[in-house]
Amino acid sequence: MKSKSQYICSACGAKAPQLLGRCPVCGEWGTYEEEVIIPSSTKATGIHSNTKPQRLEEIEAQAETRIDVHNGELNRVLGGGLVPGSLVLLGGEPGIGKSTLALQVLMQLGDQKTLYASGEESAKQIKLRAERIAGQPTNLFLMAETSLERILEQVRELQPEIVVIDSIQTISTEGIDATIGSLTQVKECAVRILQFAKEQNIPFILIGHITKEGSLAGPKILEHIVDTVLQFEGDQHYMYRILRAQKNRFGSTSEIGIYEMQQGGLREVTNPSELLLSTAREGLSGIAIAGAVEGVRPFLIEVQALVSSAAYGTPQRSSTGFDPRRLNMLLAVLEKRVGFKLLLKDVFLNIAGGLKVNDPAIDLAVMAAVLSSNMDIALDAQTAITGEVGLAGEIRPVARIEQRIREAEKLGFQRMIIPAGQKINAKDYKIQLVEVSKVADAFRILIQK
Ligand code: TYD
Ligand code: MG
Image 1 (cartoon, protein in one colour):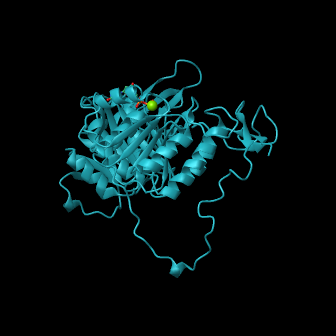
Image 2 (tube, helix red, strand yellow):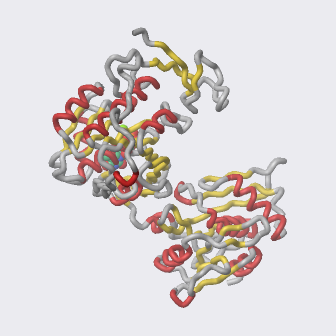
Image 3 (cartoon, protein in one colour):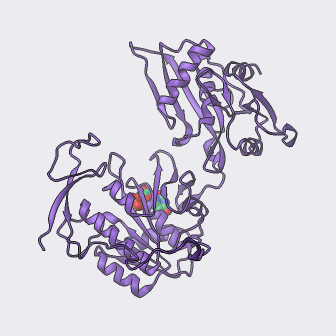
């Protein structure tokens, strides 16, 4: 059978019968790639092709088994360990530490049999990398191979507990007339691995590179195929890395894992606050400490702001790690409800450590940092802040307030500003709690010592 082609936008997954310069769906330029339509005989026909519908009561509910990967952060992000037969995509920019993380996880598994197949590096290079990582691998098998068929053949024979393929963009499957790394190859390899993984009940971790624009090659397509998409991110200038689930069929996507890149591999950071708070913040203006929660884990983060008179006409507003639109909203609230004239000021906001925070409970700390910089008055370094801010300048209650307070207490803060009306018992805590219901009240407390 002669194979046909269609064209797919590598950014959004839209399809077209011919090559387009600009995607009519997402508006990106030059993202269309040819995809060979594979004749149906080789196409995935579904994993359980002869299943019949069953009545709900007839289905035996089995307690889901999980493979403990002996890595607390990864276990948590996966939702309590690796599900047998699942397909996990581990994405991230080159050099961020994907290979290190994957190799390290396999090495930590001790005498459980595992396979690391690499199309990127030779077995010798991997061995050198492994030597830098502390640990005694006893049953880890390495394989430098780019043919998917040969990898799967070995997996069938070896029956490892976990397989890592580094990377999905460097392997190819037979019988497909498309270059390595192309959309067609990447997609077809992933589909075949998925089938194989379910059939053999062996989990696969696929490493994927991210393009300059921050998307995985063939992003949407791969995301639909795999069970879990993990994103490994961080900044070249910081030693720590954040692992985030973008999609997870077996758990929540709000958990994050934190690692620190060290000489001997990635160290798990179990107490992130220590890493995220700088020690020399006493007496500096423009810094506020926020009690944040990511997933179910509380931590304290440092919000930094710099407010200065705009040098040229239009003032600049820039924000790193915090939604810029939300910053603009908070600045408007500051103008309108608190009476600060920020219209002609440049405002730069930064969440220390390159962390991205979505928790609205850091609103009040963001405002406090901006105000502190604007007035050039340092806030009390022993006070942590938590509270969401509404358009009327009211401070709204936040989720998981007890955990935030406990975290501040644990790190030795003496005082915490919290939204009024939260259901807590102040007597349960040693830290002094100050309830506020309006932004203006919070500032009054923060600025007077
Ligand atoms: P790597 O895992 O190769 O990244 P990726 O697979 O995502 O491209 O790791 C890249 C960086 O990590 C590299 O610059 C070296 C550094 N590194 C350490 O600092 N310590 C270590 O123990 C290892 C193995 C790597
Ligand atoms: Mg690598």
